[in-house]
Image: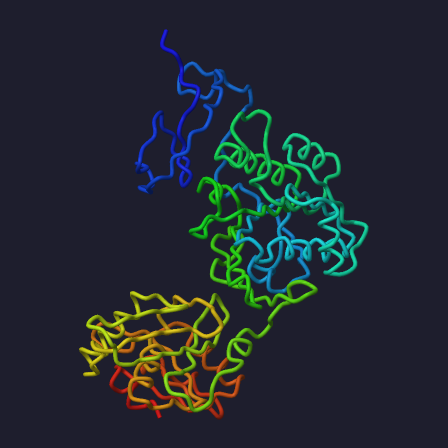
Length: 457
């Protein structure tokens, strides 16, 4: 008889299984993602033929006979987090929170535990990385806690499952999922098999017991949650903490949400007593904007249903080398190169001999095409040394023909600009309509980049 292999290779990205190592995964086409793991013990069920049925009587039902149960959300006590989650937390949901080390994942979840426990709800915080004393040090910095919050330092999945089944808390935090291990899996701690086993167990516990479970996930150098990509497919919600760990602000972004929108973001500020909500991120991002400086303009971008005003800065100067240098911080560099090519071709501005540096102030990253017009006006302002009026705001997408294309939610963008004291708005002409009229706001519609440049002053 042929000797069975004791190890197999798993793809960390998609979970594809192979008998040998391969440089590129045939399923997800990623390179160097295979890791060797012990083979799982196969049982005599689950095949297409010859498997033994479970004995359950299964009866499919039609869609019309499915009864809808009203899932009552409960608040985390943090408005920005509730916004990202779609209005609050749902019992029985599994939420994955990822982010760089030291960015504030554990601090945020400990604050959530404090708020939920204050409503006389039983909360369990399970840590596999910190001792009880370390958790208490952080808790003393945050504030006073209710007796409804329980702490546990354990990494054995079987023991954790018993505690959850016995105590049945309404909310639980697992910090972190990569530190949990199962004795039934012989692979190393934090491996693909262990992480997948842990996530599957917590998913079953959340659904069967109705517990809202938060999983803290480590991230790789590429910024994604470490472990197999199937981890993100199994959970209900995936949240990412973004921002520089040395900066004061943090952004919580939802990239997957089965119970709400995936476009919402929450903005926080890190202080000595924990994370504090930033209810008006536009005003926060515009603090310190220089007055009367060339190469600076305010643009408006939509993050979900929230308009956010950001300052776009550009510095254009003659290059000292044969090949001009282009850099972008907070914006897509390929998009910036495309917009500068449009300026050369459609507006007759020679930028081939100039270095260009683009920056979105505050360190925030914006990918919406509506900031195209802001990037173009900032580049032209720096190139021609023409300051743009401090009370002017702009938004619009730029096409390859130099046209300024329409963007969504134009009325909400104009209203947000008016609240912050702006008096002039440059936007696509196709967006100008009757409901865009706003008292004290001059609406300027442009159809191409030449008209936009002429309206800079």
